Image (tube, rainbow, N blue to C red; front, side, top):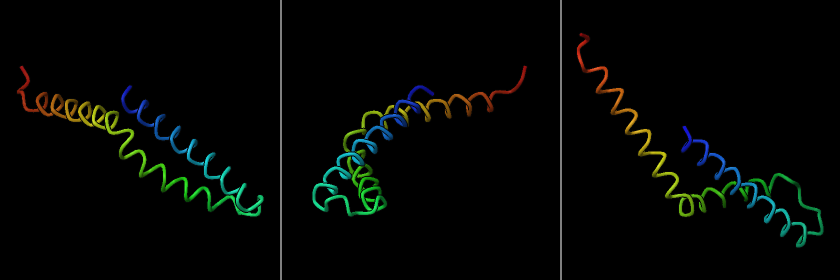
Length: 82
């Protein structure tokens, strides 16, 4: 479960960082006249693309953990009770 929370926290952190940067740039360009929704959507798309590359290692560790847990549970179910 540690891998899940680490990856989730990294995704939220990346999104928050993208949102602050996009909101800051948007407020500089438009003098604060831009609705909050557009920077939110741009930050969501940007953080999704960036997480594909930046969080690859965390995502792979999380996937490996899920696969190993599923294998252990599958093996435990296949063994006959004594």
